[in-house]
View 1 (cartoon, rainbow, N blue to C red):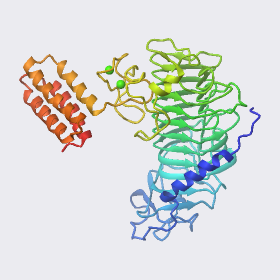
View 2 (view 1 turned 30 degrees about the vertical axis):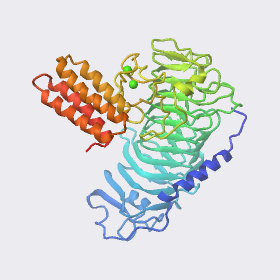
View 3 (view 1 turned 30 degrees about the horizontal axis):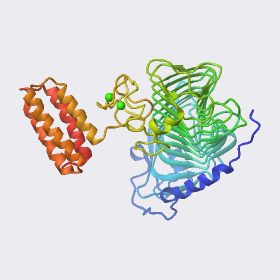
View 4 (view 1 turned 120 degrees about the horizontal axis):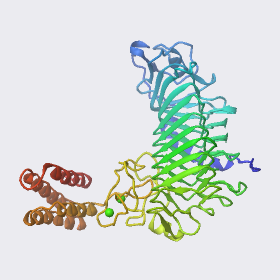
Length: 519
Ligand SMILES: [Ca+2]
Ligand SMILES: [Ca+2]
């Protein structure tokens, strides 16, 4: 056990800032809600919440239907929705809300549920292990849930298949799993959602005994103790296109017997206190970890392992594990196995020596690999952008991948940069081509088709004109040249160019025109 006591105080300032920032969305108490005639409650299996009160008089009707009443009234397969115009915070006053049937609950992104630190918020549990209930919860903020000595301050998931979509768990606290506890009988998919400012004695954000998948989701500002991780995984965990960062203690602790798959994900800003020697700041693995196309940077464990600690089985491919504070960045009794195309720091980095692996001097990491801190670079989660022309660009290999963490296309092959394999970039982020680079790539494509020289040079001339226009800031001119190019390509179909080649060229040119805002 770690001797230190993690205090919640350091969280207060970010908590307050987040609270202020969040006011506009969900804390509006002045209702915009104007009562409108509703369809009869329950008609067509739809129950409409029309009140921010709790618990309500007991039944869900058109005069008053609280969230608790709607969920209690909904039969198997029914939906709970929120009346159009209803917006604000539901303050729980009667304990947790139990969901024990196949229902979907959608707050439309306009409703916060605040448990005032007196109770857990949702308890999702069927009773038949052979037939778990199937539940969807969407469009809600779940705040200030607290289960001090128990499991799951925000949500406790037991015999259930639960999908969260656009659900934001904030300021929740529990003994195990401040935001969520997933039992061994739980299967949970967490999509486009976030855990923020959670606290758990073990598992600050999430404690998993079952099967949990995060997609396009974030875990930030969580805290925990007892070396358990923001995500304490004892089951099966998949983290895809997500971000885990700015947390106290390791981002993920993968416990003995547990399996974690990390893909197209960024772990950054996780920090382990000096009183926990030997802990890995990003991932502390005692089970099995498979990592691919992820970025592990700027995590800190001053007396431990800055990036990846391994006492089990861990394989890493096409990933950046560099610029973490802690020596070494990979450590523990078992080697972190490279499957190739990784980039790490020279010296204190990981002992990667498979095909495509690079050892880069530490000062270069933040000048010629990564741009800097976590930013909103598009997509659902923050990312660490790559330096244009830097050492990670086109030096990776990502067979089967079609997008990066943000959802941007990958691989993107910059024809001016030599490829290590398929033109994919190393890590979670794929650098997209600039407009000028897209024109150059089109020129390379034209040259590779084996066209008659007159045909090829006529097409290239249009692209050269487009490139000159882009470099001169003449967008209208670039649009004109690109339109001339696509018209000429289409005219060649069936004569000097196959339909397949033509559509590949016009698709790229049209995408560029679209990004330039061409008419
Ligand atoms: Ca690339
Ligand atoms: Ca290239």
